[in-house]
Amino acid sequence: MRIAVVGATGLIGRAVVRALGKGHEILEVSHRKARHRVDITDLNSIRSMYRELGRVDAVVSAAGAAKSAPLSQLGEADFEFCLANKLMGQVNLVRLGMEALNDGGSFTLTSGVLAQKPMPGSAAVSLVNAGLEGFVRAAALELPRTLRINCVSPGWVSETLAAMGKDPSQGIPAAVVAQSYLASIEGTQSGAVLSV
Amino acid sequence: MRIAVVGATGLIGRAVVRALGKGHEILEVSHRKARHRVDITDLNSIRSMYRELGRVDAVVSAAGAAKSAPLSQLGEADFEFCLANKLMGQVNLVRLGMEALNDGGSFTLTSGVLAQKPMPGSAAVSLVNAGLEGFVRAAALELPRTLRINCVSPGWVSETLAAMGKDPSQGIPAAVVAQSYLASIEGTQSGAVLSV
Image (cartoon, rainbow over all chains, first blue to last red; front, side):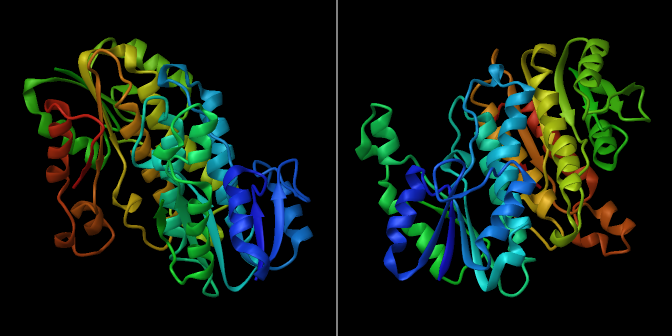
């Protein structure tokens, strides 16, 4: 398959690229570091990316930022940033990418455990992740040409915990998280939230 | 209790006002028709509303629009409308209303069944409803002074079905939906999504 991985230079994106291995043609995309570039907050940048990539069989997004901060410190601009970035950035990868996908192709987006299991500081992140999951469930009902869409909801990733000085054994290795993206790409399900 | 009902002139808002009955002081708020007015897409309008209302024991929101349309016809402006209206409109009623609530007071927002059970045409609505539920679960962890927040997720309302020319017995009467708002206001739970 010809697979675009958006956010290919991030922790999860790298693990997905590795897990996909040599059996596929991987098109690595990121904001600044990969061969192909995209700013997912910019519709024109997404359109340019799809023109540059040509037709693909799968689009993986492990991209999109959202801000963690105490609710009392989250301002209007913070919510706008989160909505434009991790939420609508990924929604727009789908909206503008449908025509780039070959028949039977798939989108696999990334939400996160805070959608369902919040913690203090996650109000905007939980909103974004849960909203994305709602979108994925609904969009799956309408995609044409047997296109599919799923969402991977990773828990805390071991490598992230290690970087935070916490116990990595409490998390899930990125290589394990990556297997859920493969399940979405290579499987038949659609509208699923794959919790890891 | 002194209770602000935002969206008081809508189908659910009217049922909530009726269900609260005469034991409370009800402050009816809506965009155009009630005694008090607010445009929930406008931060300054929300601030003015809270200044006008003074301190309250509960804020109910049965307000906020979102657009149903086929995914292929939902444009950037449609998503922006939905995010600014039913999603961030209600989030901002909370963000800007915390100080107006007396200790132990509550927010009760409104999502909807499409958050979890989508149908064709609900991509933006499902996103908004699910995002709101994610926010409510998270915000509940951080509200000060034993403030509470819940979300009522109504299924199809009988009166709405009747207005659409469909069988109202397949839905839930607004008066029954209203009981979940009372449960949120008068109960002790927080961070809950009350599905009706």
